[in-house]
Image (cartoon, rainbow, N blue to C red; front, top):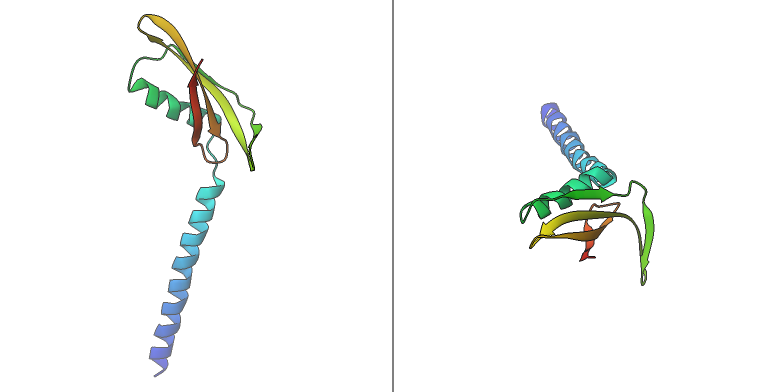
Length: 107
């Protein structure tokens, strides 16, 4: 009978440890924010699928953004490439917390 209690207790402790590990892993993933260079590389990879890039940039300092009731910090960046023999510039806006691209527009 004592062995059953010990195994049950070990099983419960093990399950709690696994659940705690998943929770901590998820928290760490959310706390790990992308760097400006990681975001820029993500945008460059997407643009390179269509055509070569002549230049790119990203601001290293976050800027606050409020759109209606939503507030976040963002990075501004840009890509330059040739389209039909003409140099074309794009600017993008990325969420500094998630790395999600919020907007890309042609200048």
